[in-house]
Length: 292
Image 1 (cartoon, rainbow, N blue to C red):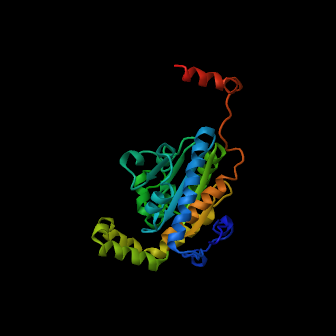
Image 2 (image 1 turned 135 degrees about the horizontal axis):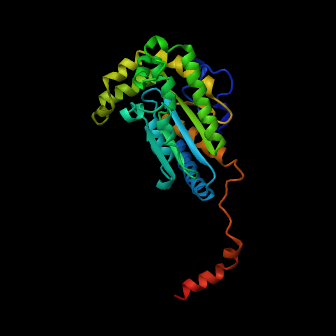
Image 3 (image 1 turned 180 degrees about the vertical axis):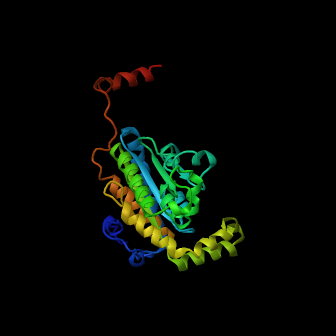
């Protein structure tokens, strides 16, 4: 199986979606990929246990992609071997009235993982420069003092919002948050196939919404907004990775390898050593327990 080179997927220069792969030849069939994923996710689970004891870093994983890109199943398969206390998943949907009563980052800030834990954002604060950019009328629901109509949502508005997002991520990274941002790069043809499967398989019907087809007609708009957002916000402290998403097992494996290979490079992540007094008296404590 082909070795995963993190730099192959990291967005560091001017990124063009049309030039970025949606499929990836890993040199193995799906069964072998699933076996490798199983091995990596067990290692990730053990690493999270160590991070929990270490209690210095938290990990934030941001997943973005077009509808049917495979975000839900990726979360299920990559984090299957985690201790349930160590990973928290947040699926952000349309903002609630309470969330709209705060600034747009608030609901994401309060959902950040504690030190020692992994937090997964299924759709993220980037919805606020993606969906809202395709549908600027949604911004009006935020009741921003300087925005009274769609005409007020100009390029300066988006520049400011990108600056705010970059500052948010810079702040949390400086305080111990290790940030991974994954763009699941799905082809339009594969999205069509997955939408058809939702219609053809009765057990998948519940996932389909006529709104999916309306949004699909805006594919090019979304691609342009994604491209701009990825280029503006992929930073050394909060990098974006473009993950070929047409093959789900391969996409999950690449994400898991990027997580593990990056985190294991942190030489300071280790279980804390026992206090000298406790360490010196381990045999005494064992004796006390055995003599009960």
